[in-house]
Image (cartoon, rainbow, N blue to C red; front, top):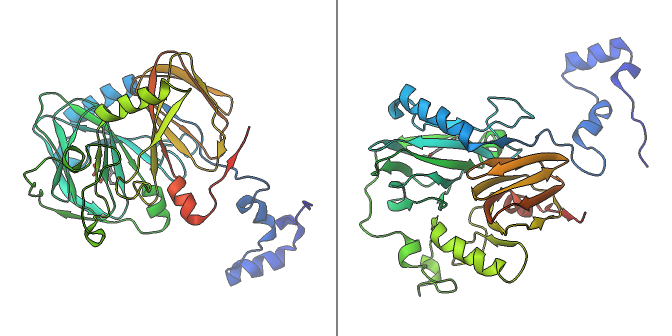
Amino acid sequence: MSQQLGTLDDLPQDYRDDMTKAGVAPLWPMMRNVLPHGQPQPVTKTGHWKFDKLRPLLLRAGELTPVEKAERRVLVLSDPGRGTGAMQATSSIYLGMQLLLPGETAPAHVHTPSAVRIMVEGTGAYTVVDGERLPMEEGDLVLTPGGEWHDHGHDGDNPVIWLDALDLPLFVYLEGSYAKEGPLQAQRNRPDASQVEYLAAGLAPTRSRVSARKYPMMRYPWARTEPALRAMAAHGEVAELDYVNPETGADVLPTMGFTAMMLGSGDTDTPPLRSTSSAFHVIKGKGHSIINGHKIEWTNKDTFTAPVFSEITHHAEEDSFLIRVHDRPLQDRLGYYEERSR
Ligand code: 1HN
C-alpha cells in the first residue's frame, strides 16, 4: 500500500550539501512527482479558443508582419496550464492558426515533426507536399508528414486561415526538432491522390506492394467526410470516423491520430476516459462540452482541448461536426494506450 515517503527536510544539511556537490539528488522525496498513484497528474489544462476572437488578431498579423518576416504567419494556441507562449496546447499536441493572404507563398521547408492542416476559412490555398499540390478547402485535412518538403500558396481572392496540428512538443522533448529550408517546389501537373487514386472507399490502385508509398494519400476532402458521417449518424447515435491510410488502414501518422465526429442536434456523447490528450476543432455546429466539470460553449470554427484522462461530455444543440486530434498512435506504439469506463 502507499507509504509516506521521506522528504528532503528529513535529511541533515551537510548530507544535502554533499549530494549537491556530487551532482546527485535523492529520488524518494520526488518519487510521487514523477510517478503519481493510479493515474497521471496532467499539467495541461482545458483550453478554449473562440474563432471570432482569433480571426481579427490573425488579420492584424497580416497587416503587421509580411509573410517574408514570418516564414509561417501563425498564432500559437498555448496550453493555459503552461501559460501564454507555451509552444503546445496539450502534452503532445501543438496547435496554431495560420493566415495566408492572396498571392502569398510560404517558403518550402522540411522538418522532423509531422504536421496536419485543418482548413478553417477561405478558398484557393494549397499546400505542396513532395511535389504534390493539395488543394485546401474548408474542412479538408491535409498531411505534411515529418521528412516531407512542404510549401504553401494562395491563388484565391480572400484571406485563408487554417489550423496546424503538429507533434512538435514530442520532438522538442526528444531534442529531435530541426528544419531545412529550400526553394518552392515544382508541382506535378496532376490532381492529388484523393481525386485520382482513392476516389472510392475500399478501392486502391493495383500496384506492387514494394512500390507502395508510405503516405499514399495526403488530403482528406471534407466534401466526402461529411456525407459519410451523415450516413452513419442516420443509423445510430454519434458517428465517429478515423482518418486512415487508404492502403493499410493504419493511422495516418506515426504519432498523431484524427477522427471526424458528427453529433446530431440534441445528441449527447460520453466517451470513455482515455490516456490520450485531445484537441477538438469545430468544423461547424453549436453545442457545449463539459470537460472535468468545466463547461465550454462552442460554435463554428472554435478549438478546445482536453488533458489526458479527462471526463468529457459533448452535447450538440444543432447538427455539429468536429475533428478530434489525439495521440493514440504514439501511445499504442509505446504500449500504454488505455480507456476507462465512466
Ligand atoms: C510549420 O512547418 C508550419 O509548414 C506551421 O505551415 C507551423 C509550427 C512549428 C514548426 C513548424 C507550416 C509550424 C511549423
